[in-house]
Image (tube, rainbow, N blue to C red):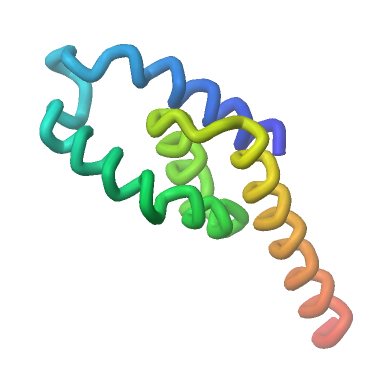
Length: 94
């Protein structure tokens, strides 16, 4: 959970640089991404418990200025779900 929150915080920090040459998205792409994220994006945080997919999602949530309480709630649900699945698999197959 702490790692996800650090990613969110880093995303919020990097969001200050969208006009820079090294920034990976131009203004048009950022505007399009913000429109998409406003409609559907926060729900992708329910996938933040998936290995190798979760870190980029939490970083993007920061860039898109997701509110911290919503972020923490959705990421907590995702992480809890991940460990429930792991526990069920461990009990059933071990």
